[in-house]
Image 1 (cartoon, helix red, strand yellow):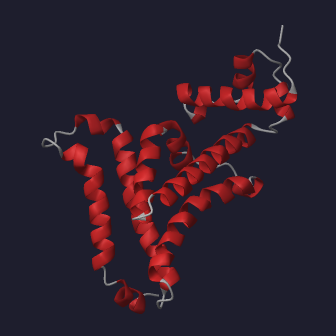
Image 2 (image 1 turned 180 degrees about the vertical axis):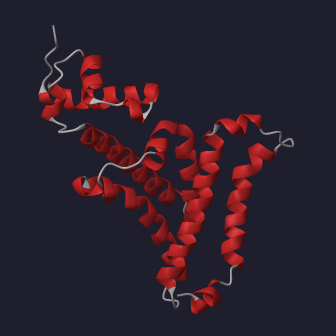
Image 3 (image 1 turned 90 degrees about the horizontal axis):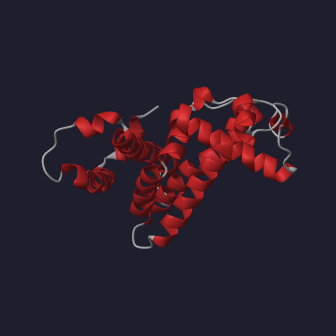
Amino acid sequence: MAKTINELELKEACIQAAREVIAEQGVEGLSLRDVARRLDISHQAPYRHFPSRDHLLAEIMRRCFEDFAGYLDQSASAASEDELRGMGEAYMAYAAQKPLEYRLMFGTPWPEPAAHPELVQHAVHAFDVLRQQLLKKHGKAKHAKKQAELEAMFIWSALHGMATIEQSNVMQHLVLSKGVQAQSKNFMMHMIQTALASSNSQDFLGHGA
């Protein structure tokens, strides 16, 4: 006989069960029917909070992005000497500590965003944190906003690339010199700082479209 759960518990139980399904079977295996079966509740019960499987997935992803953005905010504030580096290190730490959440955010096709504005809001916050840190550096310089956004894209690409590679199966099969893997994140951070310090970005922006 199917269980009965109060409404608040039902919503949270569906989210937790969905995360378990995703962890075991991937996003492709997620359905409201499987969530209900896992919770031993009526097949119709999850629909009281989630009109579709995409609505459930969107809520899980929204929470991931909200948690991610909060983690970056807190870490950047704590790194008073170099907030930008602190944020980069926090990005890598989050990806390593929460690989499922990281894959959901950056490796999963989004549900229709127009139907889930809060998902978009929390997702772009992570980029905005990075952009604002760079805008502080450039102040009122010519093309400051565009320069900050280009640098933000460069930094995000480097961080995402490293985080994705470290989570990939191929990483364990690489034959690397002693110390390379352990030093790779610090080396990447150093190269990002070097690139930002030495880039002739004003000349590039002056000739850009």
